Image (cartoon, rainbow over all chains, first blue to last red; front, side, top):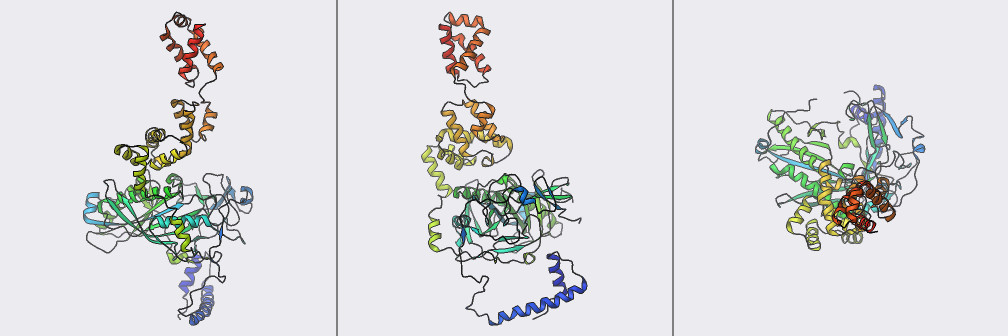
Length: 98
Length: 501
């Protein structure tokens, strides 16, 4: 199994909005490679008759009734926001200069 | 970026190229609550008043699926002749964008609830075009952003943005067509007819209020061109912000003409998201999209799979409404319409609206008259579809009832409807606020009659002398004094009574 490349780590870091230094790229590439190899061992015992499992609990169709339940007030909702304006969450510029 | 890109003449485009369309329609379900939490799903509330820890993505909160939304999704799938999945899961679509406070959207990825269907679309000349349906999947809507500081209210150039999460988590069904090929010069018309047919179907299913103006029905149009006779698809663009049926047609047509000019100049189409501008009818480049891989989809661990039993699916199949054309035939018989009247009704997009108005208690003739004449004019003046007028069939039925009861005259009724359209509230509220009730209180009318008689003593004398026809002038004066809110017949009776004394 090929090692995860520095470029791939850099790409993931960008998608996750993480600032990663050049040295860290090497460190994380190594660590992620270890993790991937550990997970890959599961694949070795997987057989065609075993479906991929995403949920440990054998439950399906857990539904809620379509009935309104009280939520938060506007004030409560905004109480944790760094900045708010006109009852809305205020966020910094979304698109940078391109 | 210039708005006036080079365009090829449409006739040349269809001679040299075959268009391929792909339409993605997002429909907000009209459930009482959101997809994964019990917050109210209602349009127009004060910002951030329909939110809770789950839809705000606060740590420790957990989603639970709205059963009614799943039911609606299955019914939509069945109505589109799709196969319903035996087993499917939700997936996380990861991205950083403030419209989703969780930093992921709960959606479905490779296991949509409905796949492989079709919708037969009737074109203007009666021809039927079959549009293949690739999939319909469940997801949640995002919050609403208000971009501040930009010249156009668009994200580009904005200094900061304001977020309202009332819409975040509202149940959304995304319906994706298979590539639509072979439409040729009729591609723009097919696109419009498809969205129209889908809207009519969704309305008949009563799963959404399908208001394009309010965003409960939204269309993204993928367009590409390939040289005539080719079978290999060209590079596509995806046009967003297409907010009316007319815009669907215009956006497809514009992209065809723009892409043809680019290709004819020997250049390549850039695969990108484009933004439709209602005012100019043109498209311009939007934000760059991450690829599907970049979204790092994975099965949602907090929601268990959905496995609709076949019994449930078949039971839901029995709840499907009539097909729209069967519906039309039945309406024609029930309401005794001529072919021409039916055509007018359908062309005005008023059939279901009239049906709902009748169901809400109005006489068919009255209901039809309101929708195809006065309301159709209002829709036309405002440049919106009839169904997008801010008045409901129930409200129209209420106006009809008020007229039938004698509370309103036809003239007053139109003022009430104007008030509803202007957002002043429901019919009763408008009657109250504008003081539009017919004055049927005799004492109030008598005061006005006496006043008019006193102001016109010579006319009064003529009436007393037996010239009954002269009463018309007094009736006119009373109507004027009561701002048209009196019943003219009753006024006349009162005048004659007064003068006979």
